[in-house]
Length: 101
Image (cartoon, rainbow, N blue to C red):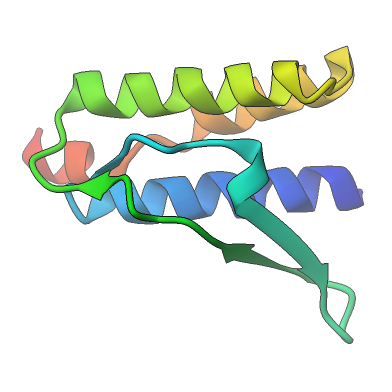
């Protein structure tokens, strides 16, 4: 459904940042703005990326994922949304790590 598409869009943004070897200190649900396109798909817009930084490690990626989950919790996301987000984060690991392995 729409919720899962939006969550995948958010995770795809995070993984694109991570795949470039970057981390994002400011990871927060408030920085993502999903917008439904005319074709029914969802675009994910991002603001306030000042906290993006180079030299990210697995520890950085893990921190970013934890911060994203925590921001959804603090925003009042329901259990189904949190579970779906956790599943999306687990299923899609940063490509930078796959290339390094």
